[in-house]
Image (cartoon, rainbow, N blue to C red):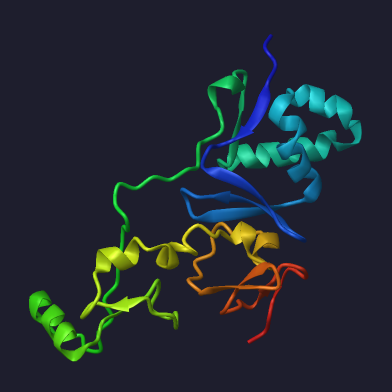
Length: 211
Protein backbone atom coordinates (compact mmCIF):
# COMPACT_ATOMS: atom_id res chain seq x y z
CA UNK A 1 0.00 0.00 0.00
CA UNK A 2 1.37 3.40 -1.00
CA UNK A 3 1.95 6.09 1.60
CA UNK A 4 -0.63 8.88 1.78
CA UNK A 5 0.48 12.48 1.76
CA UNK A 6 -1.42 15.70 2.34
CA UNK A 7 -0.98 18.81 0.21
CA UNK A 8 -2.72 22.13 -0.18
CA UNK A 9 -4.31 22.96 -3.53
CA UNK A 10 -2.00 25.10 -5.70
CA UNK A 11 -4.34 28.08 -5.33
CA UNK A 12 -4.21 27.89 -1.53
CA UNK A 13 -1.29 29.58 0.20
CA UNK A 14 -0.15 29.39 3.79
CA UNK A 15 0.52 32.93 5.03
CA UNK A 16 2.28 33.48 8.34
CA UNK A 17 1.39 36.51 10.45
CA UNK A 18 2.86 37.91 13.64
CA UNK A 19 -0.01 36.48 15.72
CA UNK A 20 -2.30 34.60 13.35
CA UNK A 21 -1.72 32.34 10.35
CA UNK A 22 -4.13 31.76 7.49
CA UNK A 23 -4.61 29.62 4.41
CA UNK A 24 -5.54 31.98 1.58
CA UNK A 25 -7.68 30.55 -1.22
CA UNK A 26 -7.01 32.86 -4.17
CA UNK A 27 -9.59 31.22 -6.45
CA UNK A 28 -12.54 31.58 -4.12
CA UNK A 29 -11.48 34.78 -2.36
CA UNK A 30 -11.61 33.29 1.14
CA UNK A 31 -9.25 32.45 3.98
CA UNK A 32 -9.07 30.11 6.94
CA UNK A 33 -7.26 30.96 10.21
CA UNK A 34 -5.08 28.11 11.53
CA UNK A 35 -2.93 27.50 14.60
CA UNK A 36 0.84 27.90 14.50
CA UNK A 37 1.44 24.18 15.19
CA UNK A 38 -0.54 23.19 12.09
CA UNK A 39 1.14 25.90 10.03
CA UNK A 40 4.53 24.52 11.11
CA UNK A 41 3.56 21.02 9.96
CA UNK A 42 2.24 22.28 6.62
CA UNK A 43 5.48 24.15 6.01
CA UNK A 44 7.77 21.32 7.09
CA UNK A 45 6.92 17.69 7.89
CA UNK A 46 3.74 17.40 5.80
CA UNK A 47 5.59 18.71 2.74
CA UNK A 48 7.98 15.78 2.65
CA UNK A 49 6.60 12.98 4.82
CA UNK A 50 3.51 10.75 4.69
CA UNK A 51 0.69 11.62 7.07
CA UNK A 52 1.21 8.37 9.01
CA UNK A 53 4.87 9.22 9.62
CA UNK A 54 3.98 12.72 10.82
CA UNK A 55 1.48 11.21 13.24
CA UNK A 56 4.17 8.89 14.62
CA UNK A 57 6.35 11.93 15.32
CA UNK A 58 3.56 13.65 17.27
CA UNK A 59 1.39 10.91 18.84
CA UNK A 60 -0.34 13.41 21.11
CA UNK A 61 -1.59 15.38 18.10
CA UNK A 62 -3.18 12.53 16.12
CA UNK A 63 -6.81 13.45 16.87
CA UNK A 64 -6.26 17.15 16.31
CA UNK A 65 -4.22 16.60 13.14
CA UNK A 66 -6.89 14.30 11.69
CA UNK A 67 -9.56 16.88 12.48
CA UNK A 68 -7.61 19.68 10.81
CA UNK A 69 -6.65 17.74 7.68
CA UNK A 70 -10.18 16.37 7.22
CA UNK A 71 -11.53 19.91 7.63
CA UNK A 72 -9.13 21.13 4.94
CA UNK A 73 -10.24 18.34 2.60
CA UNK A 74 -13.98 18.82 3.25
CA UNK A 75 -13.68 22.55 2.58
CA UNK A 76 -11.40 22.05 -0.44
CA UNK A 77 -8.27 23.73 0.85
CA UNK A 78 -6.22 20.57 0.38
CA UNK A 79 -6.32 16.87 -0.48
CA UNK A 80 -4.73 13.50 0.20
CA UNK A 81 -2.57 11.92 -2.47
CA UNK A 82 -0.26 8.97 -2.95
CA UNK A 83 1.69 10.82 -5.65
CA UNK A 84 2.78 14.22 -4.26
CA UNK A 85 5.45 14.56 -6.97
CA UNK A 86 2.63 15.20 -9.45
CA UNK A 87 1.80 18.46 -7.65
CA UNK A 88 4.90 20.70 -7.71
CA UNK A 89 4.93 24.23 -6.33
CA UNK A 90 3.56 26.91 -8.65
CA UNK A 91 5.93 29.38 -10.27
CA UNK A 92 4.45 32.67 -9.03
CA UNK A 93 6.40 34.92 -11.39
CA UNK A 94 4.07 37.06 -13.51
CA UNK A 95 4.96 38.26 -17.00
CA UNK A 96 3.01 40.73 -19.10
CA UNK A 97 3.82 41.60 -22.73
CA UNK A 98 3.07 45.30 -22.23
CA UNK A 99 4.76 47.99 -20.18
CA UNK A 100 1.55 48.64 -18.22
CA UNK A 101 -1.71 46.71 -18.17
CA UNK A 102 -4.17 49.28 -16.79
CA UNK A 103 -4.56 53.02 -16.46
CA UNK A 104 -7.12 55.49 -15.11
CA UNK A 105 -8.23 58.89 -16.35
CA UNK A 106 -9.76 60.96 -13.55
CA UNK A 107 -12.52 63.37 -14.61
CA UNK A 108 -14.95 65.46 -12.60
CA UNK A 109 -18.05 64.73 -14.65
CA UNK A 110 -19.97 61.55 -15.37
CA UNK A 111 -21.58 62.95 -18.53
CA UNK A 112 -20.97 61.32 -21.88
CA UNK A 113 -17.82 62.57 -23.51
CA UNK A 114 -15.69 62.06 -26.58
CA UNK A 115 -12.30 60.59 -25.74
CA UNK A 116 -10.47 62.46 -28.49
CA UNK A 117 -12.03 65.72 -27.31
CA UNK A 118 -11.10 64.84 -23.73
CA UNK A 119 -7.44 64.41 -24.59
CA UNK A 120 -7.45 67.61 -26.63
CA UNK A 121 -8.93 69.49 -23.66
CA UNK A 122 -6.27 68.04 -21.37
CA UNK A 123 -3.54 69.23 -23.69
CA UNK A 124 -5.00 72.73 -24.03
CA UNK A 125 -5.60 73.15 -20.29
CA UNK A 126 -2.22 71.81 -19.27
CA UNK A 127 -4.01 69.21 -17.13
CA UNK A 128 -3.23 65.54 -17.19
CA UNK A 129 -0.58 64.93 -14.56
CA UNK A 130 0.92 61.44 -14.71
CA UNK A 131 1.01 59.51 -11.42
CA UNK A 132 1.45 55.94 -10.32
CA UNK A 133 -1.98 56.13 -8.66
CA UNK A 134 -4.70 58.75 -8.31
CA UNK A 135 -4.22 59.40 -4.59
CA UNK A 136 -0.44 59.77 -4.78
CA UNK A 137 0.93 63.28 -4.50
CA UNK A 138 4.03 62.80 -6.64
CA UNK A 139 3.67 63.51 -10.36
CA UNK A 140 6.18 62.42 -13.00
CA UNK A 141 5.11 64.54 -15.93
CA UNK A 142 2.16 65.91 -17.85
CA UNK A 143 0.46 64.62 -20.98
CA UNK A 144 0.57 68.15 -22.43
CA UNK A 145 4.35 68.25 -22.61
CA UNK A 146 5.74 64.78 -21.92
CA UNK A 147 5.71 61.44 -23.69
CA UNK A 148 3.61 58.98 -21.72
CA UNK A 149 5.84 56.12 -22.89
CA UNK A 150 9.00 57.93 -21.79
CA UNK A 151 7.49 58.61 -18.36
CA UNK A 152 6.20 55.07 -17.86
CA UNK A 153 9.50 53.50 -18.92
CA UNK A 154 11.61 55.78 -16.71
CA UNK A 155 13.38 54.29 -13.64
CA UNK A 156 11.83 56.94 -11.38
CA UNK A 157 8.29 56.01 -12.39
CA UNK A 158 8.94 52.28 -11.98
CA UNK A 159 10.98 52.59 -8.78
CA UNK A 160 8.23 51.25 -6.49
CA UNK A 161 6.57 48.80 -8.86
CA UNK A 162 8.30 45.74 -7.47
CA UNK A 163 8.08 46.54 -3.77
CA UNK A 164 5.79 43.95 -2.22
CA UNK A 165 4.08 43.85 1.15
CA UNK A 166 6.78 41.37 2.20
CA UNK A 167 9.23 44.30 2.16
CA UNK A 168 7.10 46.93 3.92
CA UNK A 169 7.31 47.52 7.66
CA UNK A 170 4.16 46.36 9.46
CA UNK A 171 2.72 44.77 6.30
CA UNK A 172 5.37 42.04 6.20
CA UNK A 173 4.11 40.64 9.51
CA UNK A 174 0.42 40.76 8.50
CA UNK A 175 -1.39 37.56 7.58
CA UNK A 176 -3.57 39.51 5.12
CA UNK A 177 -0.67 40.95 3.11
CA UNK A 178 -1.34 38.86 -0.01
CA UNK A 179 -4.99 39.88 -0.20
CA UNK A 180 -4.46 43.56 0.66
CA UNK A 181 -5.83 46.01 -1.93
CA UNK A 182 -4.17 49.13 -0.56
CA UNK A 183 -2.80 51.46 -3.24
CA UNK A 184 -1.05 53.71 -0.76
CA UNK A 185 2.16 55.40 -1.84
CA UNK A 186 5.36 54.05 -0.28
CA UNK A 187 8.20 55.95 1.36
CA UNK A 188 11.69 54.81 2.35
CA UNK A 189 12.74 56.03 5.80
CA UNK A 190 15.42 54.93 8.27
CA UNK A 191 16.30 51.94 6.13
CA UNK A 192 12.72 50.65 5.82
CA UNK A 193 9.72 50.97 3.50
CA UNK A 194 6.48 52.36 4.92
CA UNK A 195 3.02 52.97 3.50
CA UNK A 196 1.94 56.61 3.57
CA UNK A 197 -1.67 55.66 4.31
CA UNK A 198 -1.55 53.27 7.24
CA UNK A 199 -4.44 50.83 7.60
CA UNK A 200 -6.34 50.26 10.84
CA UNK A 201 -5.25 46.64 11.34
CA UNK A 202 -2.42 45.91 13.76
CA UNK A 203 -0.77 42.53 13.06
CA UNK A 204 1.09 42.72 16.37
CA UNK A 205 -2.18 42.51 18.31
CA UNK A 206 -4.30 40.88 15.57
CA UNK A 207 -6.92 43.60 16.03
CA UNK A 208 -8.62 46.25 13.93
CA UNK A 209 -8.65 49.71 15.43
CA UNK A 210 -12.14 50.84 16.42
CA UNK A 211 -13.60 53.53 14.19
